[in-house]
Image (cartoon, rainbow, N blue to C red; front, side, top):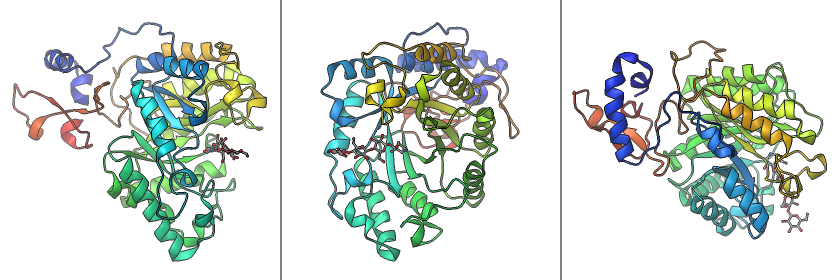
Amino acid sequence: MKRLLRDGRHRLALASVTSVLVAAGVALIAPGLAQAADTLGAAAAQSGRYFGTAIAGGRLNDGAYTTIAAREFNMVTAENEMKPDATEPNQNQFNFSAGDQIYNWATSHGMKVRGHTLAWHGQQPGWMQQLSGSALRSAMINHINGVMGHYKGKLTAWDVVNEAYNEDGSRRQSNLQGTGNDWIEVAFRTARAADPSVRLCYNDYNIENWNYAKTQAVYNMVKDFKSRGVPIDCVGFQTHFTGGSSLPSTFQQTLSSFAALGVDVALTEVDVTNASTTQYAGLTQACMNVSRCIGITVWGVRDSDSWRSSENPLLFAGGGNKKPACTSVLNALNAATPTPTGPTPTGSTSTSPTPTPPGGANEIRGTQSGRCIDVPNASQNNGTRVQLYDCNRQSNQQ
Ligand code: G3I
């Protein structure tokens, strides 16, 4: 499919595919059709990306909050409600009420949902904090199976492992690390088996600067996983440019270097001290310039919703007005190339703006169904009709 899109000799074939897709209710973005959009989600969608926010369940009864969130975003991450302390408060007793409330709100507003997070040293329930060794390893596996089983087929990605590294590039000495150095790959292998349809991400902060030990350590882990067949599909760069951090000049290089390993990249928890317009524009541009940067999520709606509200780090003021940083992000999103038009980028530092659609490398997903364009039985016969089918990452969907 990607070859069809990128090879002018197949324009006629693309035209007939397009008519089938339109009939099937699939939105395609054609070259040259981009218009300035005035909401973040619509602007990001022009280049096949999403723009998301963290949602706090406790604010869903705040009409001003939900109005902005529903208008502006098309991806949601539960800020706290899908974390281990929320989903398994007592061992082997799962509770999805808070997570489901956010999932249901998001999907009823046409948004997709990222899962956050399964294996993390933070926000563990008390019983988990007290476990160690093989008991904790078993509990981690059971937790992943329980939570992913509940959301099977429903989410676009899971942050399987969160924040496993120290600033110097060593492993964080958490109770999970104490179960053995292989705990991260066991988490990913467990996750793939639990729900083969969802993308599996490693997520961390302070990994945006390419010349930083922690960034290199995570890069080497992903490289190792890819070389050994450990399932990993994406890396989340939290992009907290708050609390003393700021946009590094190497961010785009970092994103493209990870992408060259064969994973999608995403900005997953963005906030910026005083919502610097130049930093917001720069981080957005870095994503737009990397084809496998599939979307951006800010860590809250209004400044007053932020975990660092004293830094006023978000795109909407407490009163609900769009801040200048929001305009700078919109401008960068609207300037992005609408569809892949050039050759597939190769090499480790490609920065050509050739976005892939959300859903993974080379897939085309229906915006309503979330399903993928699929060539039945991988047929190569002239006249074969393509269809919508559950996404499976196989070659007949690329
Ligand atoms: O819900 C309780 C409330 O009942 C209680 O009265 C109150 C008193 O402290 O605490 C409330 O829980 C707080 C929770 O947020 C909900 O507001 C917790 O104390 C507080 O620790 C928790 O903070 C969250 C933090 O993760 C904890 O690690 C933030 O909301 C959340 O934004 C933040 O998100 C993390 C990402 O998951 C991972 N990356 C970093 C990011 C920022 O720290």
